[in-house]
Image 1 (cartoon, helix red, strand yellow):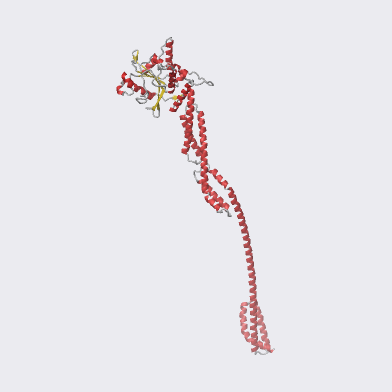
Image 2: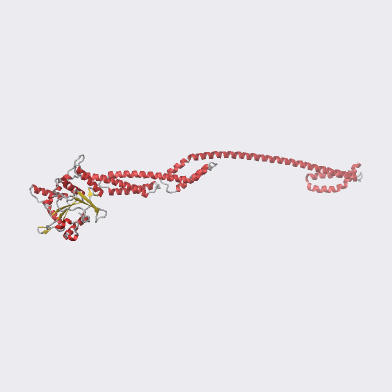
Length: 552
């Protein structure tokens, strides 16, 4: 056993029939040929200690060794004879001490068959120490395995003893269908046997060392990992659970039941697998997602990927075929973790979006404080700024699944403000229209007053023009009268015409006046010319007329 562990010392060695090891000792070492595996060596106390009066302890130790190992190594000394077989009489009671399944609805268990138990029992290796015989029979050389098979052949016979030994041989054959045998020469001289742990290899029997190497190679290379019904390889923790389950059953006076042990083991191990897989799901979500996740579709895809890996881990960890109950529990925990993660994601998205909107609306809020929207047309300006804010908000990435919901909440929260701005805008526009109407009326009235002033001024101008024309005409008339009077006076003073010429001159003067009157009516241009000419000769005749007038 120490050599299997790669050591020279470890398990205590004994060289007599007295049990040197008490109970079962366990030694775990890394497997020398299978990385990732552990070689678990179980050393039981020797069977057949002459000082033990109760053989039940040996029987239960044998049962535990069978149930816990994947390869059961039974060692005896000398040869495989009746005494060696007798020391294995515990095999006869295996069917009584190990149960496969419980009867439905009953506390008892169904008596198992040897064939049924054999499927769960370990490979049986018989190691014969201090072997001194020649491996041959009937002149033919035998292999070690053939030697074992010959020893297990039924002998026949009608005596109770012969039947008992044949039944023992039959039980070994049935319970352990896979069997191997290794024989070992005495390792050293008799005087060196008490000191084998310190004895160097060069002082040991070379044949023994060869046999030992062959044995160790077989155990290292051919022994299968310990498994349970369903084909699941067990871990160290599971092995400990099985040991506790079996020992508890034995101490309680019950019979170890494979089904019950596997069920208890599956309960513990599968529950642990559920916890481990659920923890993996939560870990994967945390590693692969940065809150908030952009879209619900992205979050769903992440959930599905993590769930697939989680179920894969559970399938690798779970034991037995009946795992649906545990799988359902895992899915329940995964769903709970998903909902919790989604809730956190929504909270993160909500906070992110609120922060974004708060930052984007900073200018709008300042404009509200400054009264920038409480002006005519302010509502349209407010709506335009709000629409621009919405467009900038939607263009920003990384807002998460609550982007639309938070935006709607924001817009709804601004509805009262929008209505207030709209009401103010309407009132201001109505007031502005009223003011514009009054201003238009004032302008119109002013225009009318201006027109009236212009008309009055025109009337005054016309009147002034008429007065001025009248005064001018009067001045001209007076000037004309003055000139006429002067001319008349000149005529009176200078007239030397005779009385005979006066009628002729008077007549000519009257004709000239008529022509002058005719000329002023339609011939102003020519009239002036003629008047001038008349004036030329009038200056001559006026004195004559003056004289005439005086004369008359």
